[in-house]
Amino acid sequence: MTSLFPMFIKLAGKQCLVVGAGRVGAPKICGLIDTGARIQVVAIEASGQVHEWAGAGKVDLELRPFSENDLDDKFLVVAATASKRLNELIYREAQRRGVLCNVVDVPEYCDFFYPAVVRRGDLQIAISTNGQSPSLAQKLRQQLERQFGPGYAAWVEQLGETRRLILASDLDQARKLELLHSLASREAFEAELLKIQPSGARFELGVELEKLTARSEGT
View: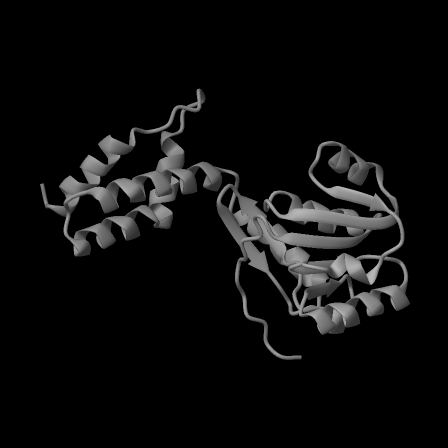
């Protein structure tokens, strides 16, 4: 198997198809919902959760057999049915049309894989074994979830706000880079956790930036 090219794709507004809406298909649908993709789900029957998503307008659910025309204008398709024959048909037709395809648990019929993901707000850490061992990917995810706790979500958000302040400042480029690297250190994160009060109060970004700037100038 050739090496994968790791990347994060923006799916907002793109048409995505999931065939199958049961125990296997539902998690794959869930992974697409927050991306802003336009999700069409085709299945003979669907789980209660998928019906809820459809009722909330998060997916377009059609309870019927798959048709090759369902692949018209699609960016990607996930085949999650119980039929190996149908899954292979979907893959072959997707290949013919140039549509990215993932047949769940069949690596040779996948143009892309669902990685194991650790999410902490805007921080996302994706793990893949190139389809060789999803179990290992899940174990690594659990380890990383312990290493990168919930506190990272607020910290990454604050890093983004502080980064914008630094980039908009009059500091020279070298000093900006120095401050950005300093903010992103493990020591900076641990120091920030100590500042969080039980009330959930957040530190003042402007004051923090002023301190960092003063330190960089040797004052």
